[in-house]
Length: 139
Image (cartoon, rainbow, N blue to C red):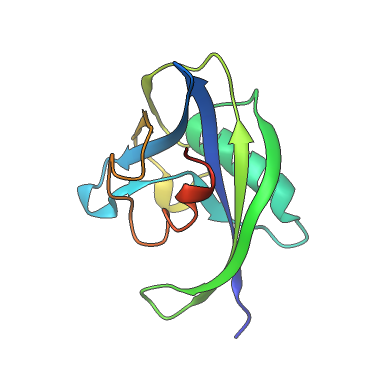
């Protein structure tokens, strides 16, 4: 079985001199607090996939991909192996909080995500695997 490629985005901004990371609460409480991410489409590179996923899941389009932070292999709860690519992304002039209905379709159809910023790895508990490289972007 081939690993499933996933692109993750640590969307960052500077506020009051501190780096913050964008997270969201899913309208399904069991889904936990997450960072934007999604499956890489066939023949799509991970760089373009993370841009597409950020736009579809957050509504943000004025973003700058700064760098690939990490690539790893991770076993999902269902046993599937994910080849994960974590990118650091910068934004400026973004609201402190907002709600957004993702446009990517599929399982997210009809859902609303509530976005907000964190300044520390201790601010929230991210769903399993989403915070694995948070220490690479937060001070």
